[in-house]
Length: 239
Length: 163
Image (cartoon, rainbow over all chains, first blue to last red; front, side, top):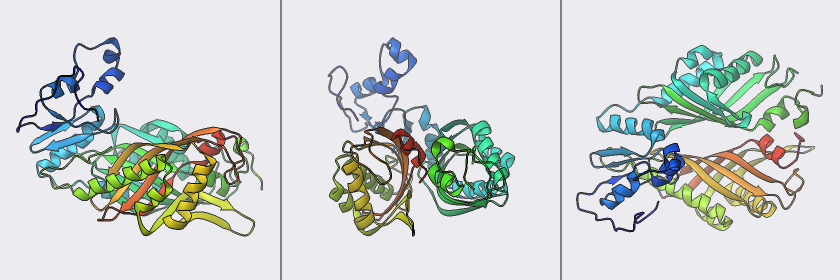
């Protein structure tokens, strides 16, 4: 967080001053208009008017501040968190991100990819980190899930740990377990048994839709279990 | 994402703030290569599991699992020794009111010594990690779990053996 003002004028804080984030000068400078040049900056203006500017730890990450009855969000990435904070403030019941995550993994086990897509917002994104696949769930996520269920017809998905964070993200540690029956991620089928620990994060909107999915696992463990010996020869396996 | 400033009026737990602070302090100590400081932020007998850490020997498989004070400390010390400029950047942080924290962290460094089966070629790596912590009500970390992809790590360092 920066202190002071761009023009060196000290901020005057009044007893009524509220904490707030806003699109920061750093974020403005990263935007197209910012690169061209802006006549003024929101962060600077707020500070000059005496606001207690409370921005996130990094640019372009979600950040929401609640100060008494004022709920403010820093940037477009904060939309979900701001909406959730608003609903909580209005007395809505906590959302069932946990139940949604349990349903997501049950459907993953059952290979119900279309039903999983039905749990998503239309713009939902997926990031399968070890595969370096980042894009729309409808494309990147669905193709992975279809390949997984097709290659492992006896797939079991066990949720080992599940918690829901303040921004309504369900964080889960799971184990996927099954016997290979078809080529998977370019690995030739040798009917090997796979058991693989993974961590998934499902970001849930206030209206109980999944808007973003992120998954981590070790692809090296997956290759080892499926009989791959070298990373430059993934499709050539030793029987 | 952080909602650590969700503090007034809606009943958000201060414990989430404390848990996030403990995790941030942990990664700050890691950046400073202060292994003792990392351990000091953890409860005695804190659990430790680096999920991708599997060393397949002839007789048995060694897992990166045990206690922070033994296995964790050893792995961190060895990593810093092999990658003397090892650093990290926390890209997202999420906490629940029960002390669970998920942190996405970019870790990178330049290899100066062999690390396990990865021979030193002087390569550099940058790799996304997901750390899951549990922090006690006293603000001490009592469980650490981490996920990353060893394929990405080994490819960047020039090692193509699955091992």
